[in-house]
Length: 413
Ligand code: SF4
Image 1: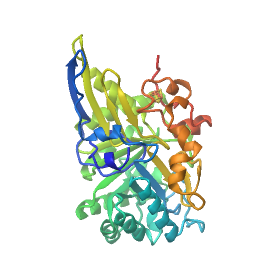
Image 2 (image 1 turned 60 degrees about the vertical axis):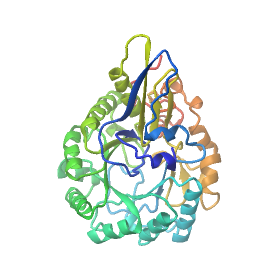
Image 3 (image 1 turned 30 degrees about the vertical axis):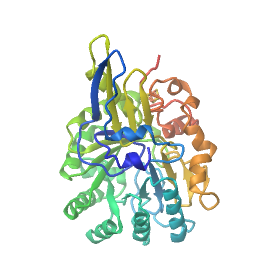
Image 4 (image 1 turned 90 degrees about the vertical axis):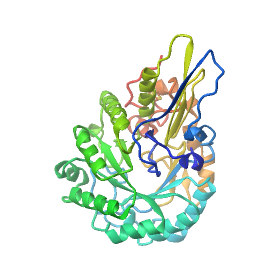
């Protein structure tokens, strides 16, 4: 899923592998339904049909660039193990411009400028402005600290950031601040959300789900609604960096939460996305199949599309979905190119090889894009093209990035 589909206004339930791309408000899944007798009638084509033609082998949907690991927060689940000070080996501004040129050469995917806290770099506005000038759509993911003033939000917006991503991990200060490791973080987040709303800067709210806060999701959703957020991006904890395996939901917990999210999304005034939970797509498809039953002799024809996937029901289901290294790519602060921020295995470094070459040619990326290589139940699953399981979680739990995702209850025949 590349730029073409990114611009096709993804709507509704999405599960995109970490892409806070811009999206229009709307909570219901993007479903276009129909049915045909016998076979032969065309499947309806909603706006997201372009997903089927974008070649993930050439063009990612999203590139996330961790411009720094410096951050004033001390989040208990930080995948980056962020530090208070900047690493002297971070990519320089000039190297950053070269990375942006490479992202453009990949086919203009969405660029997520992340950290650490990207506002810990003074050149962040120059990087955003340069990317915007090259035609990239840019989202910025700052940490909720005193650095995020109204003035800086305005500056980021003027530089070209289309959306800011802020994290909210609890419905109360007690839960959120315990996650973030800093007293007052909840209050700061609420203030920043209010400022962004006042300034007309679209907001995406991210929540990392673990046993610590799964009971808080209803309350967090109320904040997402109150903040006027465009997107609620729900991350499912991957035990990497500072995140602990004991905090990760078990498979039944994932399933319950994914079904709750799918139902919640249908009535929400914002998009609901998941990260590190591509099996959300399987849940959404199964729910749609249950709803779209047709009389005997007829076959259902409907299509589901989101920011990270497209699925067409019919005689031979057609499916496509972003996953780690497949439609998604992560550049760390030192220039290492990884399949995602949660799967920090470096295929190479932009200081030595081009990002284009690494994304398209590196064996690690090629393997991750080949669902026939998946092992265990993910390998024989009928949803493996649209889902494929979280490769990051498979690696974090088993040491094998092609193993089955342990968070999924589904048992293929
Ligand atoms: S078994 Fe694997 S591929 Fe199939 S739905 Fe579960 S996580 Fe996805």
